[in-house]
Amino acid sequence: MTPEELIAFEDDLAAEFEAGNIAAPLHLSGGNEKQLINIFEKVNKDDWVLCSWRSHYHCLLKGVPSAEVKSACKRGRSIALCFPEYKILSSAIVGGICPIAVGLAWAIKRRGGKEKVHAFIGDMTAQSGIYRECMMYGAGHSLPIHWVIEDNELSVCTNTEEVWGRDWVENAPDIESYTYEMTRPHVGTGAWVRF
View 1 (cartoon, rainbow, N blue to C red):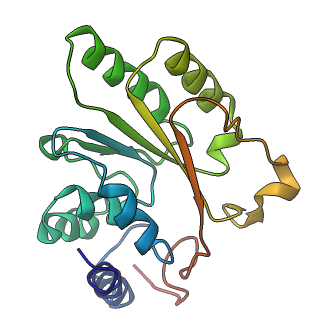
View 2 (cartoon, rainbow, N blue to C red):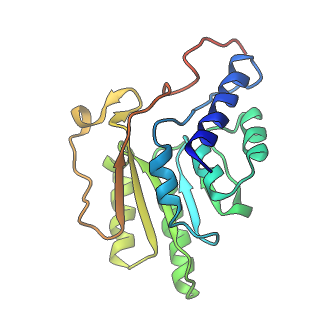
């Protein structure tokens, strides 16, 4: 997919939301199209992708058909899109995917698999204990996990560095981070919608 196709998908969802056709929270992506496209060039079909509540782009780039992603969003699942048949899981729980990533990576290692787990987390999650423990455990056991910190410099609507400081422990193996500026609000579209 191109950046323009990703943005058009989100624009379409925003219009559906504003028309009252999505009666649930909607977390739109924006501003990180190119970074994600570059990262997904290294994600193989058999790899697992785990991500947080802002996962529309991840699903599309992993190969979930746009009609399936849109249908799930219209059914109120925008913040917890899971398509195990495409090997992608997301969670709205901060850090919720971290132990799942460890479990999947252990299973891959034990059976001698070649696939990898790509775990996408936000910069706030990167400050949490659950991420630290999972990242350190995975590194300590040489598990096939690639951590990606998606840094929009916000913990929901608060400046991450002001609240948490900045310490990714980036010297650990297989951690990547990128910074981007969100082009959409934390939730919704910026327009008031009555469900």
